[in-house]
Length: 544
Picture (cartoon, one colour):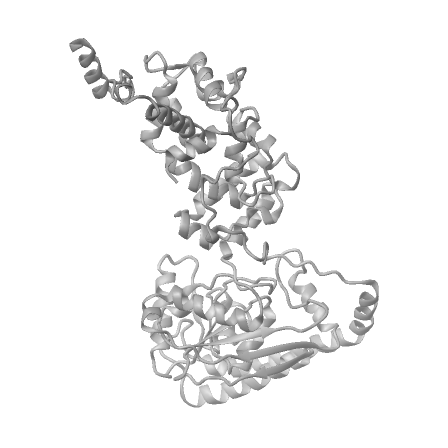
């Protein structure tokens, strides 16, 4: 649809247009399927309700089971430590060569047995489906969905492959020695080259033809409530080698298998799990997935295909949420918004709209300043108008409708970010700002007075008695608005860009509706923003 046709659609709803219905929504922007809301609004929150009967059962069983299981787990960890110490003796924290020979064979066998014994002592009944691939068949395991620290059972069932872990974990007493025994790939948060070094280490190990242990990765990178599969990080797929997907299922009535927001702390989850008669878990080894030539060149494509296969096998949808959504959710809570208000499917939004984390986080602050006074953390038409310091008019309703992508009468944070990027930011260019300034500067003196400002906004919004004194004072530092003040405000508040461009489009359509001889009449609008153009215009008027 052309810009003139878009403006005509808006003009049809402006009072005095003579046609149209102010409540009709013009199809100014196509609703791309890629921007539809996700099938799972919030995969990072799980609310578990425990009834009175269940509480009594937990208490009675816990009196017996809890101390026994805690003692058994502690005993097994103590028994495992000497084997881990022998395996890693005289070895640096970050390995440069694989552990081989008798140390690897004896310690791996012992640690696998003790690992099975530990989960059994905690009450886990494990069902294994499928066949574990050899290191030559699949150097990498990818496990999903990742919902709890108990997912480490997949590592035990898979034969203790190497893990990717923070370097701080390897320094923890007892547990750190056990972690080092599986020859992990350690990631440092303080090393700026850590990401590059980690990828290089993964490539080196996965292409070693079985010399190094297989690598097990949780590609989601964070815990979810198991209702969907979020974005897979590409690290495990960058080497371009075959991978074996591993599915985890917890078919239990009491959800003690989810470690995310609004559930329980780590200690509470352990206590609740230990107080159950048993906890079922299913570990399924899917067929090995070999990347195509195209997927070897594009690890994201490979990751998405594997994720889709795993989601279909689990019977759950996929979303484009990622760990950055978790960070936004926490930030929303700190801004007194509902936590789910910060979820935007960061992967999709950042890729399609070219936005980075800092940009989206800045938009969240802006959104909070508008929505903090509303119920539910969403922006209604009244809050939208109050933020823009404009009355609720037909043109403002049309602008609001363009942000409100799901027609529910309110704007959530996701719609706000998309609206700014798709509707406002493209129209908020230097050229548009210059044209808009000249439009307001009626007497062409390089400054906008309050009377000039009011006249144009009254015309563009179709409100003859519009009071813009509050908005004018916010932009102007004195009695008038300079171009720099106008530009600074326009860049800081791109929401106004669509109002300006709508008015410009209406003017354009009006000009093209005039006879040709009127259209070609010379324009005498000067440009006090660009002095060179202003001088040319002045000299031309003298020649005339």
